[in-house]
Image 1 (cartoon, rainbow, N blue to C red):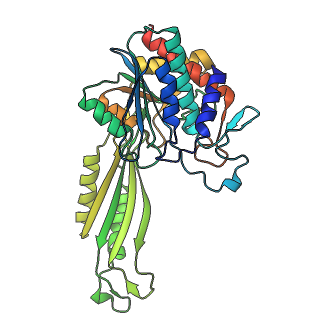
Image 2 (cartoon, helix red, strand yellow):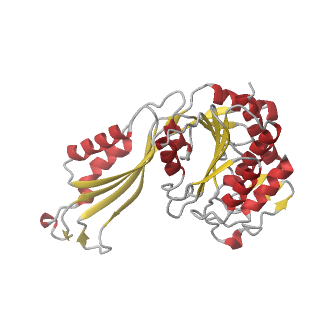
Image 3 (tube, rainbow, N blue to C red):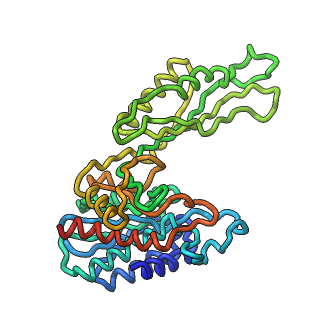
Length: 377
């Protein structure tokens, strides 16, 4: 299995699919799956290509979810090997997307192929949901596919997202949820004027300082057994014309909250507005909700994945919900149990991104055993 996974991973990495481009990755995958009897459906939206492939019928529907797009490579001269050459040096496969997430995508595909070959009349449905819009704006990818499936009343029972979850050693971490993410673009109005005549102006920076102090120190919740407390970070502040003798007429503040299940986006919006009104600030605010939090509690999917990792690696993984967002947040809206598991995340988005060849093989074995645990038992 390892050799097949590595070969497919190399083929995918050699296609420079910088988000939202796919560069033929999904066609390559679809051609492989179609030969095994998978039903192939293309769901393109604007510049994003999405693939929905199914084998079998009925429930449970066990889905693998992943993306073919990658982030830009940056300065290619800093790479030890060309970022799209997919070179293997020692035990390491190098290239943009090797860890995030063409390596685990290849492992999921080969695991599904091997299971279907051995079990052509398996119980339930095996599905793959693949997008090219995870690393960019995430507006025409998995979220649009999920909307389409929900409109058709199609169901996903269990979903494995192949994001690189492992921290120190393969199998040490499984993500069984993610925090929500919401960003505010806040514009606080003042009156522009000359710094020598402040009584003719109204400095929005000065007026906003007490508000910013309260905003940055406010405790939203205490977290939960699975989530750390909600955190807020101010990402950008801008005001002024660039001249040292002009009081600005507007202050721009951008902040992001990574929030847990103990608070909602509506509560966050309401509280921020209350703070602004409390401090008497004229303002306008624009909100961008990237995703709501989700949590998959202990149950059949979590148990199947944990048992598979223990069987292949001898490690009992820790369940975590930290880190950024993933497309799992959209799939969870279908009522599916969702977990994320994949190779080490130490080099993702970095120069010289790489993944262990041996670990890719083990990822494939774990994904295959997960299918056994969910469909055979």
